[in-house]
Length: 98
Image (tube, rainbow, N blue to C red; front, side, top):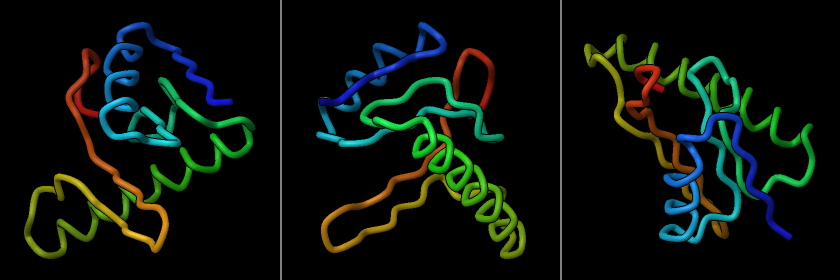
């Protein structure tokens, strides 16, 4: 059973739309620091917090790599596995960039 939980109301409609269009199993909407704003599909809080912490670390390190090669940032990262993939991207929100 998949669950969707939102901390901030404005995240619900885009999250539900994204999950439907992408057929995503797991989704985290979070700040660059790893604060979870919404999630879909996580059954255990510890798994959600681990994913958020790792996602924040990956985005921070890719930002540092972008600076090393003279780019302001990388728009998105995609990691493809044999069965699953991970897509990480920033976006504009009512609070600013996320």
